Image (tube, rainbow, N blue to C red; front, top):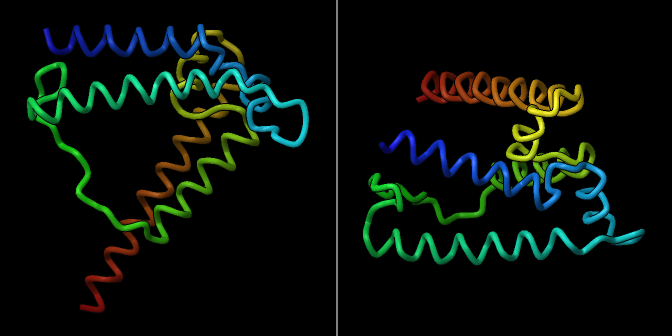
Length: 145
């Protein structure tokens, strides 16, 4: 039942991305183009998502379980470090250049268009490269200890 509910929530999320226009790179770039022909409509979508998220996490935090019943595992890190800043810059740069972020890109795969497929492949390659670099850094750190 939990897998079915997760599938339904993911489907609802994907439909929401499509209906809101978050999977349209031109609309996303229009939202990010503050100095040009700015389209503020995605700001309302994001504001609504933040509101729903705050409410859902508030309920889940009190229950100490997710809304689907799984134990809550929230991040424990509270420091803004170099990795967080660089990762945020990489994410924002990719979003601004391509007009896609991970969720909308995955939802857009259903269109059969090559752009979301190329974005997704590049995203997966970047994630794999990050894992390799993390392992190399961890191995070097252990060698020095």
